[in-house]
Length: 403
Image (tube, rainbow, N blue to C red):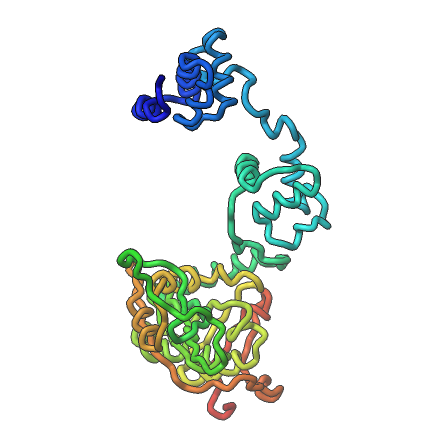
């Protein structure tokens, strides 16, 4: 009589080479040859269940299956979608409640994980596992995605016309060789051993270790990079502030660019064109911005023309994608541990098209909440343009007697 151990040794080399049906048939043949008790003995030797071996014995006397098949047509567990054809619609109603389902869905305001979806579907008489939910979502053309910033809110009716106006003014100024700069404040950055988004090449399993949280108290220093991008020369100038992002700081940054670069690059300039966002420290409603621009015009003798982008369209400003995006790429994954690191990383920013960046640190104080009186506002030599004068205006130098 063949022992169970001997049977195991006989099958051990053959077993990995067989598919599901072949294993079933070999086990069934061995059981038939062993006779009484053979099914149990083969089951112990190969690991197949008695039910599977019994099924194989029945198949030994049946017609052979077509080539390539391991089961007869219609065999196996019925498809879940056959048993529950309404499952995909029920799932999609939970994932997209506003478009296809009930706005009051219990998962409308919760994380739609596959486990949460499976639990809710089971509670609605659609029993399903979280693995099957993931499979169904992929079949329905869903995928895990983050947010994308595209919505601008309600567009101003003259949004496109303002873009065209800015383009006309910039084109004329560049054709005449006059200076044109795009300005804005980059996102403020925490100074210290804090996470900086992005990745960089390092030895495997040796990431830069940073603080486990980024909710510092007000005493933690910040950097306020204010950028001036020269459209005509593809150069950037960044003034890194350490105090507050105010209208005074914004104009001080432009003054720094003119003093260190602008006046030597454009020695014959009489006009300066600035394109800026509609809000922030250089917003079109900000009195301090205009008051400080008047002081800059008085000091330099320049007539300063300003064109603001319509509200909600800041990403169209050239400084955003011609300067700031490359700065972000340069320091990705690098903690900004001190101001020297910030300045050095910004100054090393370049592109294949030849962008060069100058960076300086500004440790002066800029008081927040500074007010410009009506009397001071009246002394600004501001001339609004015919088209949207609130967005497009020129500030000319005052005579000495008017200062």
